[in-house]
Image 1 (cartoon, rainbow, N blue to C red):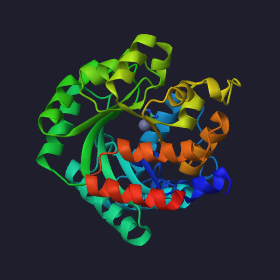
Image 2 (tube, rainbow, N blue to C red):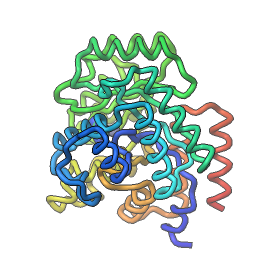
Image 3 (cartoon, rainbow, N blue to C red):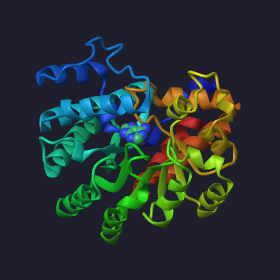
Image 4 (cartoon, rainbow, N blue to C red):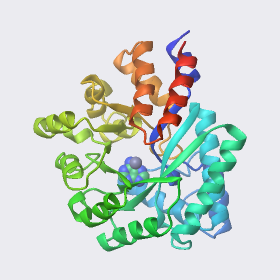
Length: 335
Ligand code: ADE
Ligand code: ZN
């Protein structure tokens, strides 16, 4: 069996994927048309084209606008999970969503719609999902606190954590201590996008001041030995996104060797790292491609590939019995 065959067979867990970055292009185009949203093009091959991170975020906001009603959101979730299963043999995902980017629905309506989409995808395709509400760091710290208050007021067994995304330069982690402290007091698990394009210090701040148990991305810390040592010694889990890292670090535009990038260094150093797609219909990538490209670039053998898949289960916030099931399924497929 080739490594690529093995990768395709493995039932996978991903811990870093955004609802709004994982809506298939045809679904986005149809929903946008229904709401009179003007797109650059209605060609599904090009509707997600972007050339910079900020352009990417503008497009991401358009997807948020297209997911305007509970029915849109339910469909978006369902189509996202089916796409993950079809392209990457996705078995379980912890999926970010950006409640404060959807002005036409309340937090509770959004969660209820997402849960309906998850249940339907689980029944039809055997793919499970839990949710992480994301603070948009370009909005104010007060909006972030209000989001956590909404999470507390509308608890759901499907919403298991709080995250923070968008542009690190505009919203460094120290601005959001109140929201994360409130979440921690209510037993909500915490993660943060840090060290993606922002400074390495954001990784340390997210651990020390926000109480994060995971870091999303983290690549910048490979350029700061002190932060790198701190994060390594903390044992924190990193959700790495290979194609996003390569996009940011100039692999596609400047011919940078992918084996030298931040994420490549983190994997080689043996940190607890799992692989995820981040925004798989926008990038575009999928879970099989993430694993295959990492394996080819770093020369990983079968055991190392299975080790990456196991790391995702270890780093997840699923309950112990779910984790045991996921490990047994992985072991059976790896045999
Ligand atoms: N929102 C969706 N994808 C993101 C990313 N890669 N970085 C920051 N915010 C995001
Ligand atoms: Zn992300």
